[in-house]
Image (cartoon, rainbow, N blue to C red; front, side):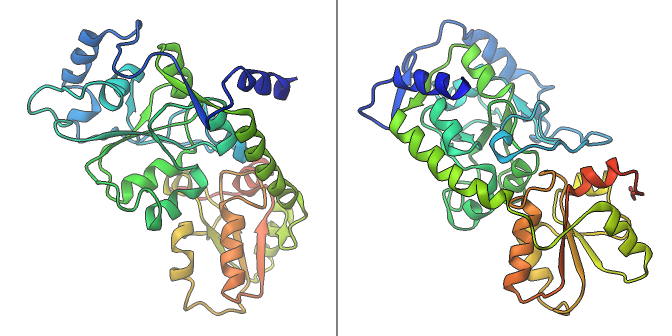
Length: 331
């Protein structure tokens, strides 16, 4: 029923173009936007743009598990990434860019960045922004649309609600100092009556067909899989495998398998180049609940390409380890 509803909604849009814009053009002020209130918010010295575009990290971050399709629908914003209200984001990116003189945003371009998979974007998206799915951020920074983007750009990332928590941090670590999350995501944007665009039925069907073609591979048994109980037995046996966590630093600090080291996915090839190819290695992450195509699955692929021969991939990852009652380290 949900799929029928989606196609019916898309069918209501004209099929002549890839996207059809809904609502007023950006030169108009949407009825629910109070421009004077936006200016007051921009001038508020307690806001993150006056605090170096930073917010304090939470004392503990709990890792959420989700399938790739839901990676733009996390209910909580990424830690350490400040929020930007929808009307302020519209004012900066879609409307006139007049901010008070001397403001941290003065003279800086603004861009909205959609981090969802393509089919979700085709259902509804903010016009004139960038599209870089959460899984493609590293590639986009190295050779895609983010590589040559002016580092002074104010980047406002969004999903239906909030994107996968590690990806905005990757963007900020690449030199973009003003990275924000759209407060409330696309849902809040639409509640404000701000413009959106919808893809055609044909484009949506093509995107879903392409995404579904990958799903059987994700559901195939992983030949390197090891369950939490088996890994606990392995660690107790004294074999001392190298346990690698490829997720974010905050999760690693808040809860990790004893003895595990953290190697970010984009550093795996460099950091493991001099490692003994016959060493027993266990790889896990904290986000994907054991799906083969998660961050850790990609890391296993990298290591296999580097001719490592004794690779194990933890089923269920950090979530399954904790739920099994096995010990964790913290700092």
